[in-house]
Image 1 (cartoon, rainbow over the protein chains, first blue to last red):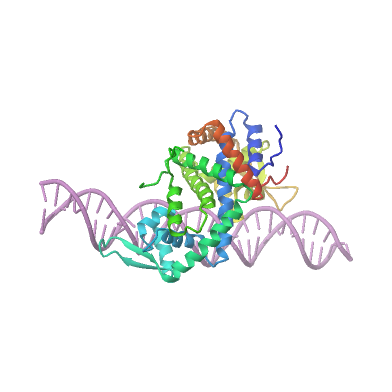
Image 2: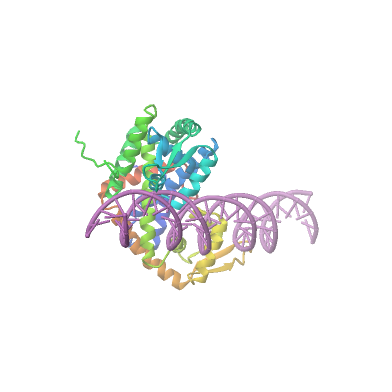
Length: 172
Length: 172
DNA sequence: GCGCCTTCTCTCAACATTGAAATGTTCGAC
DNA sequence: GTCGAACATTTCAATGTTGAGAGAAGGCGC
């Protein structure tokens, strides 16, 4: 088989482990290591890209989540906590700052006064709509080294992996 | 085509975007979102698993890097900084704590006194060798929902993605 | 209605990382 | 040899997250 594929940084790590611990099967590390590495690379790239629009990544995470939730672009603080994978203390802090920036409103839910409803302001909605388009374009560029077939194959394998790990949609 | 594949949490996000912004091609988000999500899931699982051996993940990152570098199990602080993707200030702090724990030694390089050499102690090497075996077994479990062919296919696509992003091995 | 348990958000102290400046070292040019 | 630039690590203040716990509100059994 033609060994034409380039080596990535994970290949080097695997070669080192193979030399030191040949008893260990390196294949699982090859998958998990690459997923971690790719995630870190995307994370940095996306952070830099959002900065062009004066946004931090967590800011887009929140206003984007509100936008994609559809009209009336309003979720509880708890729903935002669940979708962002940070703790409740962090969400309180982030909402504070988005309110200061005028991108979201915070109001107590009159029907359940334990809950706080966070909704996009007109400014927030406008900004989210603008940025998401650039964001999607940029993500497509990041994947441009894969053709459409490879990209879909990759998505399919990752979906299978995630569902196997229990990452199913909370409510279908 | 039999729609037998389960949906994961990213499918839900994509459906939301499609409803709100049908003009945006959701395919790139499907890939990058799943990579991020899978990385976060693995991160948490591995953290919990290392905790069973009384280790934090960053502790294994460092002693594991030293172990796989091979005899004499010694790297400079700068090399460790490069391989762990954190800043130099963080590495100084982490090395401090590993020295306190007796897992590594820190000494100035006599040949270049700007550099600091970090080496595994006998205890550190023993611990790293023990833990890496359990770590590899656990990673294999995390991937057990993919068969060997799918796993290798996934690794291959990720390698292509990473090399396309410029993640080549620094020195071949 | 009355307790009691659960739910939801906010508060706060502890902790870790970042990023820039400081310190000490090497190397090349002159 | 001396000067200055480049380099490697440490220090330190600013910043953000975590995780526990408080406070307020809802819901269920009786």
